[in-house]
Length: 229
Image 1 (cartoon, rainbow, N blue to C red):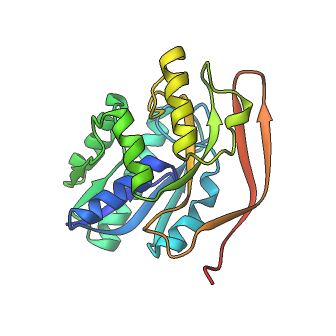
Image 2 (spheres, rainbow, N blue to C red):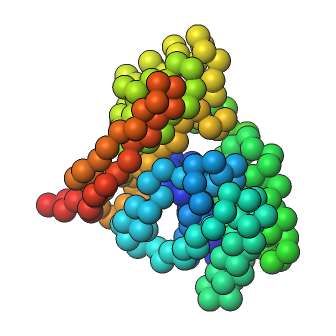
């Protein structure tokens, strides 16, 4: 099928594209909705303005909309506009999204897709957390944590690349503090720097960290596509 992908730049939406393509689908356009703030319940917020570099590296066109409030209905309407435009301009048959456990997100996306007579592909749905996180590493996904908001995850995790050692640490913290290892509960947000879909990896040139003692964010200020040569 010809698909549009709901794309935030994080590990889940990027890996969902990877799996959809492995299943034989084509991903013809990325749909990115900028939330009004990090209070959104539906959308991914940190560093979403740098998804344009990821789209360029994947060589997939991107449609972007911006939500003007945190109201879920406004976000729903903007997403509906994006999907309608994608169907009109790219003749898509379905939508791929990277939801794992959130029934709220899945129901919203399913309603919009049904309205537009599109099939929903959810390749990550109900994946077991530990095996999924290991699967990402095995598939050569390189990503950083760009926001935290959970007991057990402190300032030191912001901007950190998740490799096998850090995953081992996360597993120990998860057992102690009982958060979702895959961050599906909003414990953390991620941003992909490189993966098999990318022609060139992203290089962060400048960044800043915000930390209030419990929540924090790694904000990219400048980034570029790195020359592989």
